[in-house]
Length: 184
Length: 277
Image (cartoon, rainbow over all chains, first blue to last red; front, side, top):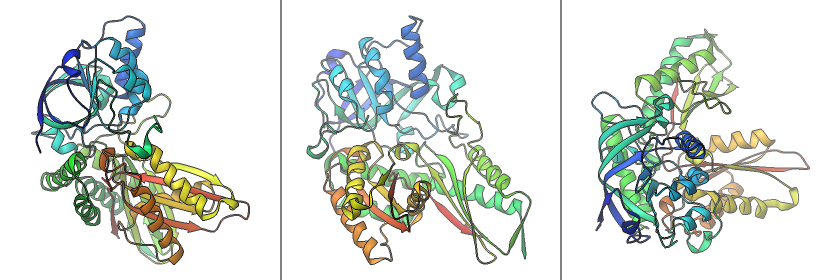
């Protein structure tokens, strides 16, 4: 299948050029962060504290890997359900977050707030081992005490993804039968 | 009386968990292979990745999915068996050993403080006393992407079969896209609130797509599967014909005033393994 190459980080202007339904290959930098890290980032934003990484143009991958076994750079690392991060996402978009990687639907509020500036990529849930093979660099950035939920900076090398929600509010999860019935 | 040392249970539980997370059951893989013929585009890509991922997991003995779940253990214990030692402790120690030794993700934590137990235990143990002198153990490392998408409803007797079907379809419609479809749907009808939920979970141990022995339930399974697969959610929610691989339904007698129904959602990464001691 033809996959368009996408280099991360993406600027808001570049994010706008992607379209829902496109299959892409992701290259470059992303940050692993899921529930507990989002809660902390949200609190830091509220208290105007320093953030663990620069959010402008950043890409967050919602994932918490298995521990790395001997010889592995990172353990199996698939996406978690993005909808649980919806509650925290709007302020991150306001800080310039331009891309998210995860699985499953997003809330109306997130889809609307992405307009003109951000894109959401879906990757295959339960294909964690394949996904981990596309992670070629790993660096711990923040919250090591959160274990699997710590923030890691990673480098992707051709991870296949689908543009699930684009910056024009097109959403591949809104198929006819389930439109407007999100459970997020 | 047959005497079985608790250490035998511990070793069995540990081995089963490691096997379960690294290899999907054949019937699940066959169902995904079959679904592949129905799908195109991104949905087809997802199914191909799932199959390739499973092959890789088998070969490298690493988990298919990073969510190696909460450790659920079902034990049917023969009444003629005496366990020398603590059964509960053996189960927890076996699970903890597997998660540590095989570099699996330990997701178990205190629900309110969110403090990790660091062992992925306590395991969720469902113990039944049965006739005989054997011990049957099934383990199910259950991910929460799908568990979170489960539901239970106390229907009214007047809701009947259509009410049950409606509940199944509505739950899948609202939730399945977030549960790593194609899903496997376990449904428990009747009993009490907790009995319906456990019955639903036990249906996830069945061979994928093998029909219920009851004509009524088998018909209900077929109808439910037909209706959910016409929703168009498809693999990973990308749109398609395969929202669910199977729907497994079982029933229990209930009260004249009630019709409890529980749906336990399982992702395509339906991991479970059994052994007899």
